[in-house]
Image 1 (cartoon, helix red, strand yellow):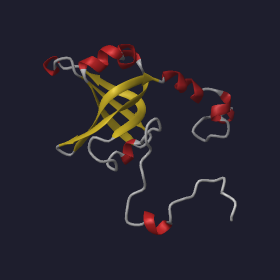
Image 2 (cartoon, rainbow, N blue to C red):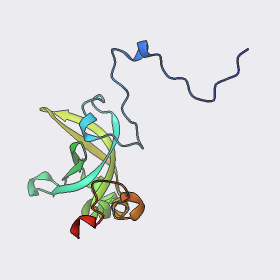
Image 3 (cartoon, helix red, strand yellow):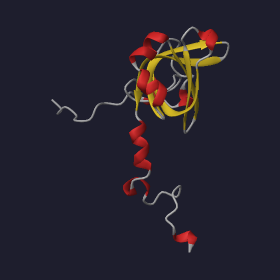
Length: 145
C-alpha cells in the first residue's frame, strides 16, 4: 500500500480544461479584473484604495464606494444597516477589505457589502524598508545626487 502524500493532490489537467480556474474565496481577496468569473450572488472578498464615496440624498441612506486595486475598480454598495455596523471603516478607511455578494445589472458588477474592514494600516508597509528594498517602484535616493 503506497504512503499517503503530504501534499494535497491537484485536479487532473483534463478536468480543468474547459472550465475556468476557481476564484479566490473569502477571506482571500479577488482582484477587480477577475470579478466576471464568479456567478451572480457569489460571496467574494475584495480590497482596494478608496477612490470615491457617494451618499446621494435620493439613495435613502445607501453609500456607494469605489475601490481600486492594481487590476481595476470595484463598485461597492453599502446598505444603511451595514453602514451603521461598520460606520468608522466606511467613513474614514483609505484601504478597505469588503466581503459581500456579487450583483450584476446592466453590464455593471457591484459587491453588496456584508462586512467592511479598514485595513489602512497596511499602507504603512509600503513605506517600511523591508517592503521596498529592491523594488523598482521605489526610489532609493541615488538618482538625486
